[in-house]
Length: 167
Image (tube, rainbow, N blue to C red; front, top):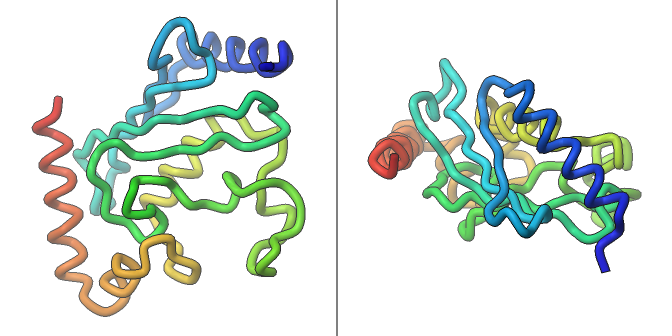
């Protein structure tokens, strides 16, 4: 069963975002009856390869939020070293709290309950601005980012164009 703390916290964050929108993204519920599933649209950050794009994603919150992180999955086409081929975003703050079993991340880089929808979205926008190709979710995209930047740019341009056509 969902914790009332999670429901109240998500309702507050949604209300705050509606009252005080944040540049770079918009968010709302997928279905008014389910506070745990949000539609988000990320606007491609200026001066990046993603500029001009409107990328849709689903943010799914666990029943024990904020003790565990949500998952974020792009539903728009996305070519990025830190996005799995199924659209799931792979950034440190969305990894479960505590020590990293593979020893790559510090516990301080991982999820903590102080994160909000806003801080998560700003981290994803930052990820679009500067990929981390050291621990890629999409090895092919990371390899292309490092070795064939021209090919990488072409694929990202296609994603941007496709996102604009979906409007």
